[in-house]
Image 1: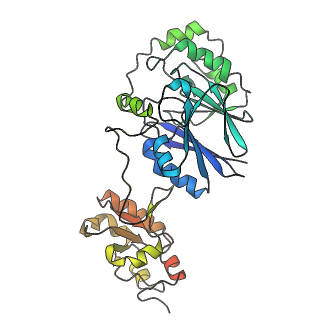
Image 2 (image 1 turned 90 degrees about the vertical axis):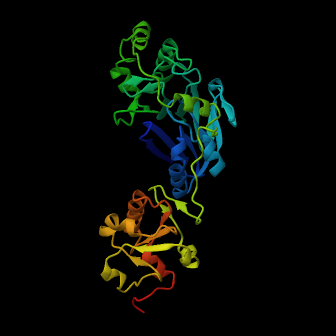
Image 3 (image 1 turned 180 degrees about the vertical axis):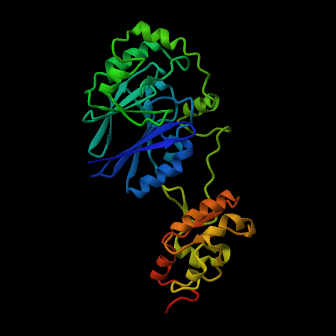
Length: 357
């Protein structure tokens, strides 16, 4: 069985795709985004997968790839087209190559035109294809920079992508209207640039008159992506919190384990966001905790001392997870959630004040 997730970066409107083998637990990511590396690593960990590869469909101009950063964090290998001209990859791909992940694999199809190094990744049973910026949903990638060639793109789509089974689902690297997936038969029928009886000269004429502005991040993204995302002076890697051994969840929350908190109570401010009756109720509360109900937290966050990191606590960990977002918005950077809340704290036999015997 295939593990599949479609992820989205709202800043660049980029789709990242996670594919995994449910038997071996090996996985790969297509078109990861630098700023989303924490999110992607968290999801991979929560699903019990091991990241074997990161793949880019081309050298992007609108965002920096997360390939290098994920390699540092998870030990994954980097692959992209040899024609892309990038340095730092573990494998340079040629047309017809296969990238295996457990019992599954992707086939590499060269589909130049948007850039000279564009490829489409096709799942082994041809049920899914990842088209990068070559073929978009009811559109196509632009061809006016980075070795773009409208004739090459037209031929790539018509001969390499439209040749797939008509039921094959097509997943692009970007969409700016909220569309998520298409199919070969849909694009053959309804793509206004490349479908139906549109000829090569029609397409070339259309693309040469788009008159689009260059991507805002092109001067930063292209040099970084030619290094497979390894930061230069222009893109420092995001800093990791150092005040505790934290875990970042797919939901976007930093968490700290109860055993660390119990051993380091004096080093943090504990904010209990339950209601007063709960704070003094059967579960009790952690020694030194300050009661500040969730409903009052946003208005009173400025009252909190900023000399130590904050750990938010509630009954089961849900309200306190929300509290971390409120506190970060209020300017408290070092903040984490206690997963499982007081229910877990009591179940593990940790010390409390008050509460039932």
